[in-house]
Amino acid sequence: MHRTHTCGELTLNDLGKEVTLAGWVQKSRDLGGMTFIDVRDRYGITQLLFNMDDNAGLCEQARGLSREFVIKVTGLVVERSNKNPKMPTGDVEIKVTKLELLNAAKLPPFLIEEETDGGDDLRMKYRYLDLRRSPVRNNLILRHKMAQEVRKYLDAQDFLEVETPVLIKSTPEGARDFVVPSRMNPGEFYALPQSPQTFKQLLMVSGFDRYFQIVKCFRDEDLRADRQPEFTQIDCEMAFIEQEDILNTFEGLIRHLFKAIKDIDIDAVPRLYYQDAMRMYGSDKPDTRFGMLFTELNEIVKGHNFPVFDGAELVVGVNASGCAHYTRKQLDELTDFIKRPQIGATGLVYCRYNTDGTLKSSVDKFYGEDELKKWAVAFNAQPGDLMLIMAGPTEKVRKQLNELRLEMGNRLGLRDKNKFSPLWVLDFPLLEWDEETGRYHAMHHPFTSPKPEDIALLDSNPGAVRANAYDLVINGTEVGGGSIRIHSRDLQSLMFKHLGFTPEEAQKQFGFLMNAFEYGAPPHGGIAFGFDRLVSIFAGLDSIRDVIAFPKNNSGKDVMIDSPATISEEQLKELCIKTTV
Ligand code: ASP
Image (cartoon, rainbow, N blue to C red):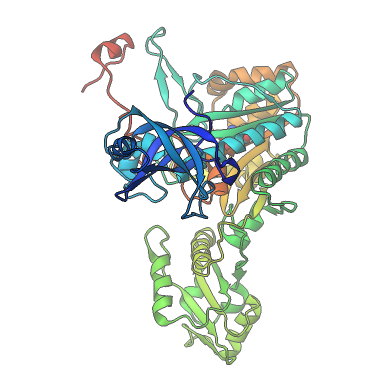
């Protein structure tokens, strides 16, 4: 038997037992007469004691063990004289009677402890060693638990888990596809799914009613901290439902997860229309852990000969409560922050509402105290507050002020990782204008249903058509999104027409779906959650990388297995791929 117990479970209740443990040497301390070794496995760490007086040979053997050697020990559970209250096993140690070296190890390239000295690149190259560290391992344990709870909840709601293919066909769904050459069909390619969207809709046509899948999706996009070329979705679809049913079902899922995993009770999830989210927060994924809502000022600031405000489409600001004491230097920092190229604002106007009741702005030349009082009323500001104001084209200035609001939230410590504020954002626009291609694109995807009352606007004012589309946002991160789908062939054809497809193109790419709609398609809709993001939020992490066992780096590379990599001439030939390299 390799072990009778794990390295995480022995306590004072086990005193006197003879046990066998197996694991990795984390640390060893040689105190002359005694040698202590910490042995680690997935479950925890237990201290081993080797006593020179008891067994000099064994003690010598123990001294020869280095970090990460794999060992098996047998011994007695005894009470420690020097207890460690921080460890579950910290009251006991094992007085070792037998030691077996199962495998030696090279010195690891970084410390395999809670805190490590290894840089990102090194840890990625030796990911299998990084995964031995408890913080990384705990993220994967959390991920596992969340996946189990998702299955439990959805199964109880009669959802069926159905697998859909990974080798599919390239379709325009927003991002670029990863493609796979077909050896048996020279010159032809499969694509890896960006999501199982069309398949889950076909499952609804097949009568499956409630489908889910925890599924890998692939998008060939430029990477950011919260993006990976392959990622996991909790993908769901339901038939014979309305938007309200979807919102209730998946709000239930989120509440179940918070309760089961974190023992947190989430109140009913508030709902905000897209238009209001943009107006009040300048973002379709507002962080609602804190207030600091936008105040629009056009009506009170225009007409005072301040050209920046007079010429702007929108003058809008936030009230940073309690920040009137901000120094010139701090205000300059904020101005520099919004002027960074990523944000691109031209300037910041501020107005201090001093604690003595006086008002002082950076544009005193144009606005007297009486005017500033009106500002304070509009902002609902109190003495001690600081009003921060920006001006510009509506959409742009809202986005810029959103960045400033989030920055102020950070500075004021309002974005607590242990606080969770979910929000539904509803009624997204159906289409969005794309400057680059000079035409409209589906904001969610082309299968999303317009609101029936807005269909008439498709010809006259396409940008104003609202969709039955919704996102679930937690703490300013979009964790899920979905829509009620089109289920009639005619409406789907019309949609493709508005997206610039000829009838032939639409038929070639999506004929299979439109044909299916002619064989009795029920009304249906669904949603998909970014599982990696959801886990990272539960884990309190900014990046999804640490909740993925073997992630890729920012260049889309797996530096451990060294992928992507070239393939042999022979393979290329077999695939009928000619290269110039
Ligand atoms: N397939 C969509 C996505 O990946 C989600 C959905 O509409 O259900 O974003």
